[in-house]
Length: 258
Image 1 (tube, rainbow, N blue to C red):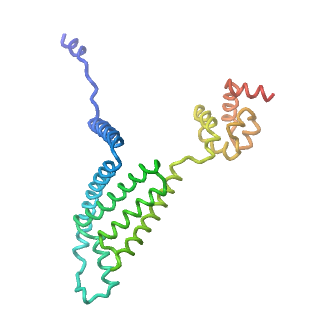
Image 2: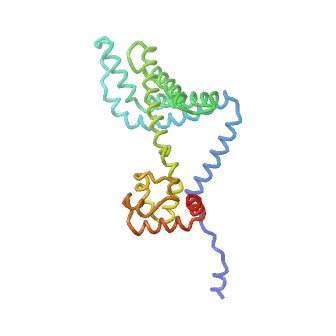
């Protein structure tokens, strides 16, 4: 009786709390982005700048706790005993190794300005490309230079120099990311070949097809000798030729060519 009661109880599968949290976060993020897209340019730019600055401040504060010991160990000699170049170097070292509040300010300005300009450029130009990314990086670099006091006494020149440096670095990273995120152009010629090899469990031989330039258009023409020339063993050759023979579309193309 007790066993029957135990069997009649339905046990609901327990969801992973971490997965529930991630799902909830994605829902909130999607809703926030949908609301933000309906706002005016000024509101969207202000919200994006504020949220990004807050994130940057948190990262900067954390980084500042790691460098606070370094900044406290830097000597502070009298300014009269230093020439302008040495004083500028000292200010630069202090700016890069400041405490939590200093780094929170620096990172907040840098990330907030970058995100705000990126938002405006994307809304105005309708796309996000390397030019927009470099403009945003120039603005964040220039503001970072002005706020942190990096460089010599000529703040305007230092701001331009820092902005150009940030823009060049950001542009290079953007182009590098675009290059690695996109599949090689030649892959579009091997889509059907890749699908066939994956279905047969022979995906390791895709490089042999590419080496021999055996593209999708050559599938109806494949012969045992052609596969042998690209160093595919007898067993995989038989499977590939049998698959081509059984494929209605490829068989029809073979008939047309015949």
